[in-house]
Image (cartoon, rainbow, N blue to C red; front, side, top):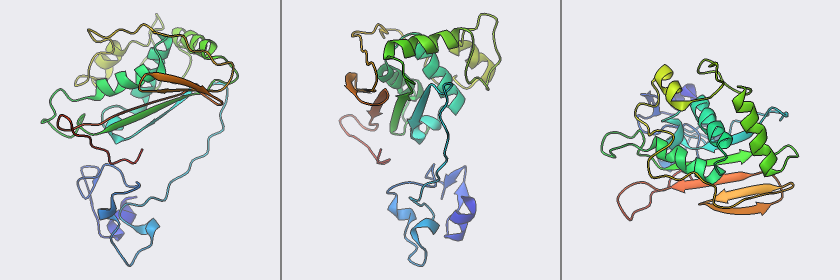
Length: 233
């Protein structure tokens, strides 16, 4: 990526393209695609994707898709741990999306770009033939005995993936918000079941379609009453 950026006349500074953009492949961002002598795949920023194939197994529980507004604040392992803890607590996927974004929000929007960017997160649940209720129970059981991805912090005797303890070990959640925040209710207001299919949770509205469960939340950031969206998500 760096070689392509430099060859196209750009530079990388503080891990950002030309010191500003936190990604090197994207739709839009046309100011980074102005070299008329180069093809689309050779521009400073290209929309040509990198494709990685992964064969799903019964051990794959869900997929998290998110923009840099999330990944600037949390590592992949931190997000996975956060989501698994929410699922184990029977929290709806759309609410987990909201909680993740709330966790990433900066306390002061004037501090820096970290936690101040627009945020999009989608959680796709791999039912693997289970009902939604069975899927929640299955992951809850796995979390209880610490089965599943856990590379960034050590195992604990009680088997609980506790985020506060993880924060003490890694120091990565210091600027974030606690997992359970005062004034937030985590009770599931309605039961959602799907014998097979997709559960789509968007802005706390649940719909059942064929496929796999999917939760999506988007939050604009900026001045009050003004919406910002650049990712094309």
